[in-house]
Length: 245
Image (cartoon, rainbow, N blue to C red; front, side):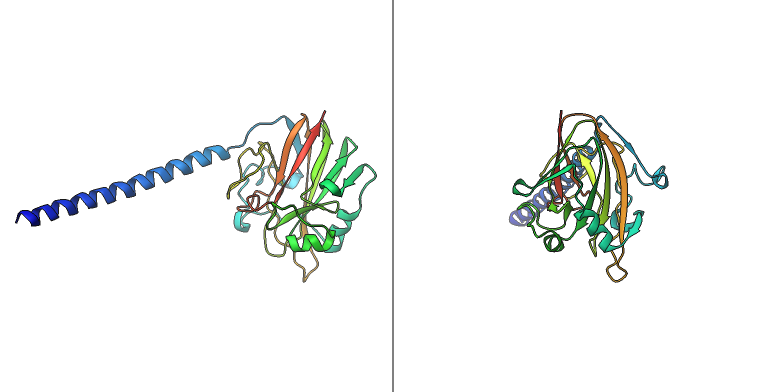
């Protein structure tokens, strides 16, 4: 009887320990998620931004309204050829430096055309290779893949983003914080700097979705442009912006 009682007590102790471990795991997970969520909150940065009228009061302040395509803005439609031509038409005020994957903008007001595209297609249309950190989708700007953008503080920039990916949503937003990024990348996003997710391109119809927004970047320093769709920045869909005085 004593041995049976001992076994019963040991079994109860093991059950209690197991339940305690399970509850502790749930508590830690909830704490981790709460801390990670807090880290995602937008941070202020001195800049100003304007949006197209159709987006005012829409999904701008809600960076994840377009997740999985829900609430994504179709933007304007352009042809695949128009998007590639826009990327290849390099203005005189842009210096392209392939040796260190850098674009230098020698103007105080300009447009930056950005293609969001699969990495293999980026190689096809640029003839260059993506940075080693980029393992999936990438940005193409003036013939370079995820280039560093160098511009002067106080510059007014219009980003014109075209999604040439055939099966994935993309956007382009700015962050104060650089890599590495997590699966859900919102850390350091500038308040009000939101762009809706653009739907995939339709190569059968020769059409892609385009969206533009303007910013004035007011302080010297380093910013990062990235796609905030889950896993994209984590997989290397980002680049640096260097603002000089």
